[in-house]
Image 1 (cartoon, rainbow, N blue to C red):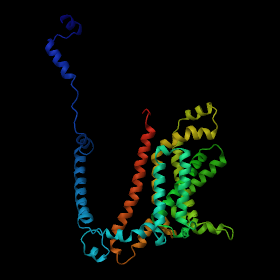
Image 2: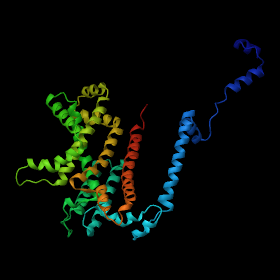
Image 3: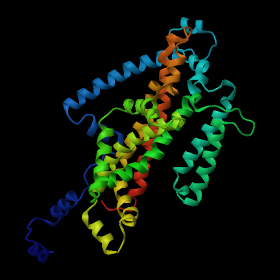
Length: 381
C-alpha cells in the first residue's frame, strides 16, 4: 500500500482516498419525471418565461372554460326546430345535422348523394393505401389508382350503368375540394420537378423558359390565374372547341402550385454536394438516370418539409374557386347559411368546416413527419 501511495504521490490515508474516489464517481442527479424536467427547461427556465407561461396558461384556462360551457355544456346537439337553438344559451350544433348534406355535397343532385359517398370512400381508401410503404410498388399502385379513378369517375359523372349523368358544373362540397386538390398535386408536382431542373439547366433556352414561367406565375395571385383560366383562355380557342371548365381550373391551379413548388425543389437540388454529380458522371450515368437515381431522391428528402407545406397550402387554396362559381365545401357552407332560419348559427357551421380542413392538413403534416423518420433511419448525423 505504501508503494502504491508513493507511486501516486498521494499522502492521504487510504480510507479518505477511497471515500473521495467513491464520491467523485457518483452520477449526477437525474430527475425521474420527464414532464417536470421538460417544463423547467422550456416553460420556467427564466423569470420572464415563467411569467409568460403563467399568463398564457391563465388565458387558455379562461377561454377554454368559456368554450366548454358554450360549445358542450349549454349546446344543442340535435333538433329539427331552430327555435330551440334560438332559446339556448350555448352553441347550436344541430345546424350541422340539419344542413350537412348541402354543406358537404354542394349543388350535386340531392337524390344522387350516395354516389358521392361511395366516391369519397374509394378515394380516401386509395390515398390511405398509397401512403403506406407496402404499396410503394408499381405493380400495386398502377392497378390501384386505375380502378380507383375509374370508380370515382363513374360515380361523379354517371351516364353509364343506369346512373344519371351529372355535369362537372354541378359538382360541389367536399368531393369537389378533393378533386381540385388531387388534380393540383398530381399534375403540378411533375411539372414542378421539370421546372426546377430547367431553371438549373445549362441550356439557355430551357433555363429562360423555366425562369419566365416561374417568375410570371409567382408574380400574380391565384385569383388572377383562375379568372384567366375560366374567362380569358376560352377566347383564344378556335370556334366550336370547348374545354371543360373543371379541367381548366385544375390545370391553372396545378401550374400555379408547380411554380411555387419548383423553387422549393431547386433549393434541395442546390444543397446536393458537387461530388454527387461527379460520382454519377464517373459511373457513366446519363443526365436523366443521374437525376432519377441519385440527385432527385436526395433533393426531395432535403426539402420534404417545404414540399408538404405547399401541398397543405394547395388544399386550402381550393377555397378560391368561389370566385368562378364552383361550390367547394367552404362556398357551399356560405350558400347554405343564407337560410334565414339558421343564419345566426354561422359560427358553428364554419367551425365544422374548419375542423374538416384541420383534420386533412394535420394528417398530412403528421404523415410527413413519419416519412422523415423512415428516410432518416440508418443515417448518421
